[in-house]
Image (cartoon, rainbow, N blue to C red; front, side, top):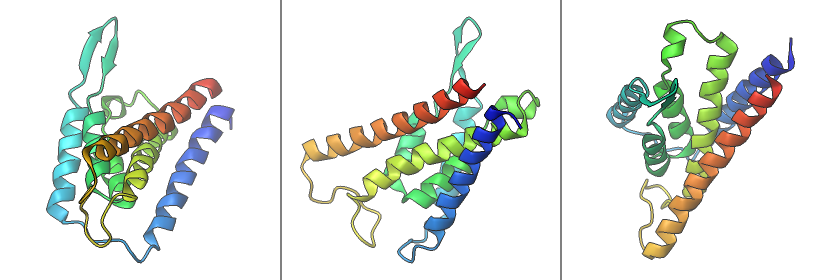
Length: 165
C-alpha cells in the first residue's frame, strides 16, 4: 500500500473513530429528521452543480451550506449531514478510486465537525440555539473562527493528501 492510500485510509479511520466517540455522548439531542434530510438534499444539489471557472477548473459551492450546517447542528449531526450530502460527479463516472472518494468525504466531515465543535461553546445547553444573549461582535467573531477552523482543517488534510500523491 503506497503512502497516499495509507494516509487516506488513516483519515477515514480517524473520522470513524471520532464519530464513534461522539455517539457515546449522552448529551446528544435528536435532530428533526425533516431538517437533516432537507440539508442533505440541499448539499447534494449544490455539489452536483459546480461553477466552471474555465481552464478545466471548477468550484463547488457547498462551503456556505456546510457552514450553515455547522451553525445549526451539533458536531455529530453536522458530520453526518456533510458525509451523506457530499456528492462528486467523478464518483458516478468512476474517475476516482474508493479510497479517494472516502477520503474526500472524511476530510469534509472533519472540517464541518471542527467548525461545529467550535460553535458548540456558544450553543445553549439542551437547546440548539446559538448566541442567545451574546453581543454582535462576539457572534461575528465566533462565526469567523468557525469558518477559519473549517478552512484550516480542510486545507491541512487536502495538502497532506497532495503531498503523499
